[in-house]
Length: 89
Image (cartoon, rainbow, N blue to C red; front, top):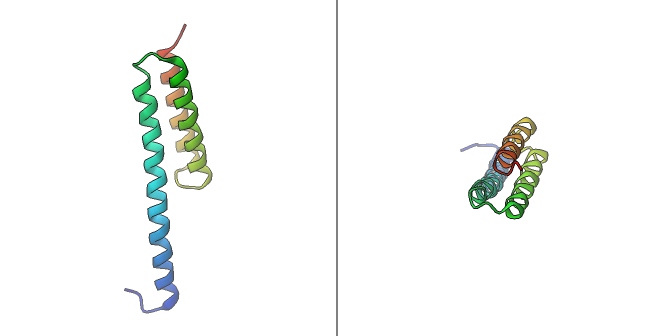
């Protein structure tokens, strides 16, 4: 435990931020998983909507520095490739 008041405050702030970031990461993972699960069902519209939502959440997490922007770009690229492979006409 720190002896300095400012460090105690920074610990409280860091704990709040850690919980907020963990929740946002979990939300991103949930929507990515919803997209992956929607692919085998064969419904192109539902998969496209799930992809759009997952990509949006990845971008938002990257802009808030919860994940790195290149990580978000890589994951979006892989999800899009999976979509294209599943629904190539």
